[in-house]
Length: 407
Image 1: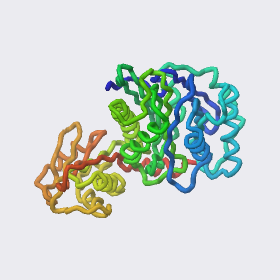
Image 2 (image 1 turned 180 degrees about the horizontal axis):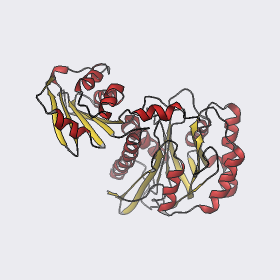
Image 3 (image 1 turned 120 degrees about the vertical axis):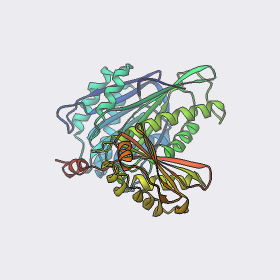
Image 4 (image 1 turned 30 degrees about the vertical axis):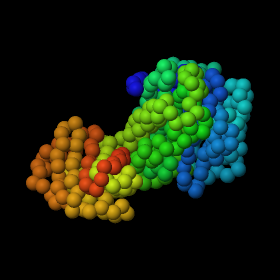
């Protein structure tokens, strides 16, 4: 496996474009389009929030009932959530406009929105944006990067990832882009993610691979504990790599799953590290667990602890907050056997052994915690299972960003 440059246009046959439609932002691109030269097998996972945005409902129909797609239209600034029948009609009109211009069925056009909840989309600007993007579609890596930038809201940087693998002698590429910075607490992923591949794989296995991988990637990140109304992760496969179609769980399937995991984990960590107002990516690894589920529960409890997140912002090795969060997680373990470490590019330090504080250097701990990527490792000594979760520190700027988000 090789990590390469690019995002949604890295795989064969995929094109992208962006435009400034003036939906909410007046000084930047705010719409993106992904298009494939041939129909794709489509897979997707969506929010478990009972309040689902209109684009989520539209895409669930396309993925689960049709199983094919050839284009995706995304807008930033307005979420098209809590917009009733009018919002659903705007999804249809967006897909219809794209379908007409691309000469594909409207029910093979996926749509996605992100931004303020409760506002209606300016559908005339949306349709004008589609008209502007269709002739600008390009397979250049730069086009994919611009598309990734256009879908941002409070994100500070675009987020892309791509890998290449060999499947039965054929080079297969998987690439993706995502956005997510606030309202991040996946229960399916709280964000928008679009992954493309030229692999030949059945729709059933494509869906199974995505659903399973989401649990270990996007569902293991959190910024603020809020699960969005618009969570969407879409995976399109066009088969243009020419590999024998994957129709069973063989070696090619396992290799595909591993590559998909690299793309999704990379994108997930980029979102966690770019949390609103964040200065650091905070990773928590729980090792020595009895089961993977136990490790997941414990690690997620720590990254969602506001007290722990605040300590990370202050570069304060307040390990008691970590042990406390583990204790109320609901997972059973013996606190008197826990070893805890902090690690970053500045080094590694052990804070507690068997649940008791060691005579460590606070100065050294602060140095380690001052890096932009910090890891806490908790060994609970119950078995061989492990899991990782990703979050960020909690800063003053998070409150500032969200206090006036609509204005």
